[in-house]
Structure formats: C-alpha cells, structure tokens
Length: 393
Image (tube, rainbow, N blue to C red; front, side, top):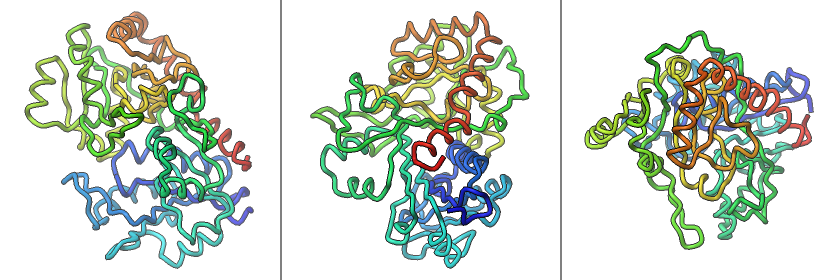
C-alpha cells in the first residue's frame, strides 16, 4: 500500500453525486471524501457507470451529463479535490470529465482500496485488481430481499466485494424481520463532518420544523413474503397528516408536489417550500437546515416495518447543526440515545410528546442534538471504525 501522497494509500470513493446532483447527496459523499482524507488516505472520487444521469429540472434520465458536472465539480474542487475526480459515462455517446480516461485507468491500477458508497458502482474487470473492495449500503431491504430470491445479478455484485456494510444496524438481530443468512452485514452509519455543520444561526421564534423530501417515489416497491413493502413517503405522511393542527408550532415540507397535493397539504396546515431551489445549491441547503427549528420527517415503509435500524443521512446533518430530530422509528433507538435531541415515533401521541419535550427546553434540546451527532456520527469515529473492521485501520 501507501502508493498515494498520504501514508495509507490511494482510495477511490465511488458514488452518485453527478448522477443525482442535489445538495443532500453531495453532502453525503463529501462526508466520506473529506473524512477518509482526514484519516490519512489519498482520496479520489469516481463515477464510471453505464447508467444515464438524472436531469433534476425535467425529472428524467439523460445521457448529457454536462449540466450535472457544472453543478457538482465546483463543490468538489472547493473542498480540495481538484484533479482528483472523474465522471465517465459508460454508455454510447458518454463523455469523460475531470481526469482523463488514461488517468482513470492508471488510478485503477494504482488504487489500494475502492469504497463503493451507496453500492452505486457496478464493479467490472478493471476494478477487480484493486486489492480491497468495500461495499457500503445506505438503504437496506432491497438487496436483502433480492439475495433471498437468489437474484444472480445481486449475488454477483456482492461477491465482487471483500466486506459488506449497511446502515441497517439491526440487520441480523432477533427483532429484525428480514433474514440475512447469506451475507455478513457489518453495521455502520452515515459519517458527518461536525465542523461543516457548525451553526451560526440562532433559531428564531418563527422557525419551523422542516425536512427536505420527495413526496412520492415510484418504481421501488417490493413484494416480500407475499406482501408489498412500499418505497415512498407520502403513504407515511398521510398517517400523520393533521399534525400541524395539533400543536402551535410550524411544520414545513421542502418538496415538489402537484397543485392538488399542495392544496391538500395546505388545508391540513403544512407549509410547503419548493425543494429544487434549496437542493440545487449546497450553501442554501445547509442554511435551510441550520435555520430550521428541527426536523420532523417520516421514513419509507421498507426500513420501518422490518425494523432494520436504519437512520437518515439528512437527519444526521440536522443533529450536527444542533437541531432536534423527530423521525419515524426503524429500530434505531436500540443504538442511539433518544428522549432529548432525538426522538423516534410510531404514533401521533409519540410525535406530540416529542414536540412538547423539545419546546419545554428548546436550547437544551439543540445542545443534546449536537452532542448526539458528535458522539455517534462524527466522521472520524464512524469511518475509523469502518476501516478498522475492513482491516485497514
């Protein structure tokens, strides 16, 4: 090892920030890139996939990645990755941006580790010469079901890696209703750079509980044991639709919805902000979170019903910004402290109780949120543990 400028060697982080160039995803990968660099690795960011990228303005896939490159490349370079990123469209007409193709092939030959964050990169022959290949799954359920079904593509993708991590911290536990006999899943969490989320904005009296979300997702529902498990948040929000009428504090969703849904949400007391202007800019996105009173959000059924123990990377940033979080219970309270700063819920009564606790000592709730982030999500701790378990500490 130790091929790179830093003592531990060259490490490639594979990801999806050019594929889906919105701020929440960009921060998710910045935490990995900068966190691993701070641990002493010579870090590169690579996207080298056969899939088209997502056009966030037209909400459709496109082979033209130029707009996405313009959105994301300056952010990578601002945080010290100039000359250390590449996007190569592995499809007909796909172009290479950042490092050249020759430089990318050389990087593959020299890299000591590839870190497949969100398990987004399909590993090919040129990747298999990299000595250590780490699989990091951000959203449990889909892959575990495909493994149980014997899906060859999924099994081959997993077999191409040396070790497998998941945000599903409760996978394999007796109270998790999702068998995982064929793969050894190591629990991990989203790393967060605490200094990146230091909050200069005191919460004003008219601040509101908010979240940035997609109201309705399509195409990822799965049938497991004869029952449909849904991958969309609207079904979960509808269970608590009259929440804003229950307490004299504001609740806001930053999302994109049609006019009919907008009227319905407004009638039930929800404030709505267009999410795209917020998510298209990393600074606006961070400030939106920092200026929020806290986060209230729901979670997709696929991680709630089986009690996977999953926790949101966006909720981590609210905590790091010193903003309390009220989020749907997935089993995460087995691993994270709840009751002040962080609250899990399954019922409306539990939501209302959480709001009351926060509002009774708001300053103390904010302090507790930041302390939880520091203790349980700080990048140096999370990534240090992960790399140690991978034999690379």
